Image 1 (cartoon, rainbow, N blue to C red):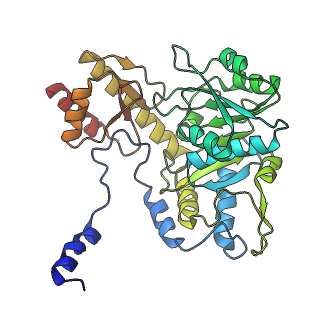
Image 2 (image 1 turned 30 degrees about the vertical axis):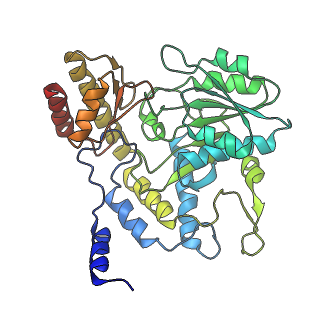
Length: 362
């Protein structure tokens, strides 16, 4: 029998507070837009995986995909609201594998791709062929072509890498994909909500892209989880579909069955509130903050990777990073050890000024 003392010891677990963002600098998640948080609460019990039972959230999802198509240059997008970039990337690999004629399909990707492709290759039993990026930290299409062959089912490019914010030459990677008769997937999970306001060529209108990952719960300020999987052609979703005999809808192309109505509704509200001007302001403020931070760190003597998008990587010693973490800063390094700061919507100039002062003190 549980004692009263044991019961009292358990109570504080229910009293924990959610994460504050005042010192969060390396996360690609951010505070949701207030209207998005409110909408998510309203649709907590809705399941877009059963659209005939929950038609309201299904309609919201259709509108979300249409707006994401507008963001990414696709007039008639296919797709759905996923749990995030990992699921969207896995689905792209799965669709390519299912459509491939080869019995031993492979995926060709730069080393800068998200680690979710390692998961996808493992789960789907597909060979992942990775090539090094150039000195500019972008994929070289010639290297992609050297690895690709008649068994290549998918070529991958990244539009906003998670470590350095780089944008691969997507149109040239599309040429590689077509040369070996494979699909092209673009991972724009983070970059997709800032790239529309730049001159980079990265979207469906710029190149023969087949699938894309783009996450409203990152720069889009939707609540977690709210990712996006987009496809140019309905045949790609058909390649993912399975029969659903006990539901009123006859088939389902999503990876999970029950899904988050909160994520769908939150993404819809965030898009409705901010596309396009709100997102433009987020990008311009974030880019200005990244440029300012890069200049400040250079002035302190650190080597800094030029921030082409709102992300700064600086060669700050590991001991300093640990000391910053001890002071409460939520910062993490790249795989090569640089300190990485992502200028998300919650990151203010005042936060960065205090951060730079702490770096200087250390």
